[in-house]
Image (cartoon, rainbow, N blue to C red; front, side):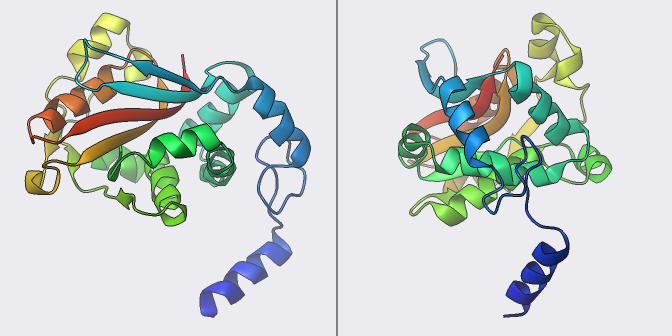
Length: 218
C-alpha cells in the first residue's frame, strides 16, 4: 500500500514518459516509437561452436537512436531508461520465448568501484525486472563476481578486449549452477569477449548450457 502510494505520488508530479521521444506514456514507450522500433528489430539468434556459450539472441543493431539511448543509459546517468528497454523486451515474443528456455538469469557484473561511481549496473536493472515478469526464471546477481576493475572494454581494440578481460571474474556458489540452463544478459555485444569470459568460468561448474541475450549487437 505504501509503495503504491509513493509510486502514484511520483507519477503525479513526474509522469512516466517514453524513453525514446520524451512524450508522456504510461508504458514508458509511446505507440509511435514502439511501432517504429518493431521495424528496426532484427531478432537474431546466432549459434556458436567456438565459444564457451552456445547461442546469442539480440534485438537491434547497435547504431542510430538505439546506440544513442544505450549510451545514455549506460554512461549518462539515465537509469530510468531501463523501463523503456524492459517494455521493448517484454513485448517481443521471440525474445521472451528465448529467455524462458533458461533456468537462471545472470546479469554481466561490474566491479564494485565502478558500481559506486555509476550508481547502478545497467544489466542488473533489466534482468531483475524481467524475472519479476517471467515465470520459472530465477534472477541471481551473486553467482559471478567481477574481481578486477579492468580498463573499460569500450576503449579497447578487439585483441585488447580479449586480453583485458582474462581473469576478471570469479564464480561463487558453483553448486547452484550445476545442471542448470544459464542466460547471461548484457546490454551490447561487440566482440563477445566479456560474455565469453563469463561463460568460460560458468562452464567449469558443469551447468547444462549457457546462452547470451543482449539488446544490441555492434
